[in-house]
Length: 248
Image (cartoon, rainbow, N blue to C red; front, side):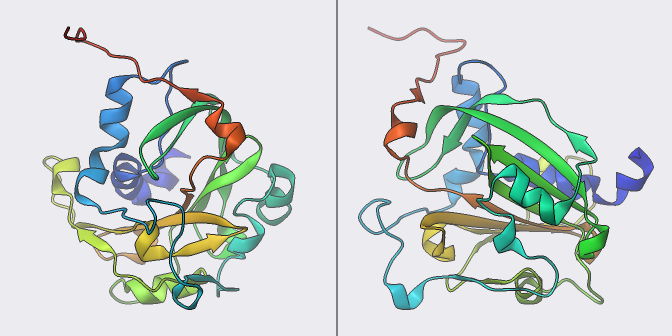
């Protein structure tokens, strides 16, 4: 199993470190959790109109279309049972976590039931599909190992999965996340204001990463990043101060 995953390990590492959606492993989010999960946010602008309440005019919104590879609309924001009608049974499961995070309008942790499941993507012409479920719904969908020939092309990759995003992404080559590795890692972040993607009335952001311009080592991650609703707001968890004492 491990050998079969080696071609995408670098992509998984870079993407997991850079992903804006992270969950606390502990029962209470810590200052270190916030620092790690927010690292990529330091250089990515997430300015939304009315500070997160809207994604802009209706004529400039992103679109989720059928796509050539995966019916993303039948997975994203769907219940576990609905998503698995498309994906089948999982090949691996991650332990549940109890804190989730959003980054709009500000970074905030809230109590939730979260579970990660990994699926064989071969019937969708992918290597793997990684889904993070929050409170029983698919809040994050990662499509790993895309079909394609020649050098990786961002627009073609988005088209394959049915994403039409109007804004310009933040592009970076995060060599600092793979010290000593000569791989060429590239990441494109579409924040809320660039993706302008409303699915089921919820704002989303999109992250694309690739190693050595290799389609088989590419990953597209679509992540719900909507302001908390009333129920989630009632479950906000304070961030603990770790390793330092509050100054009087």
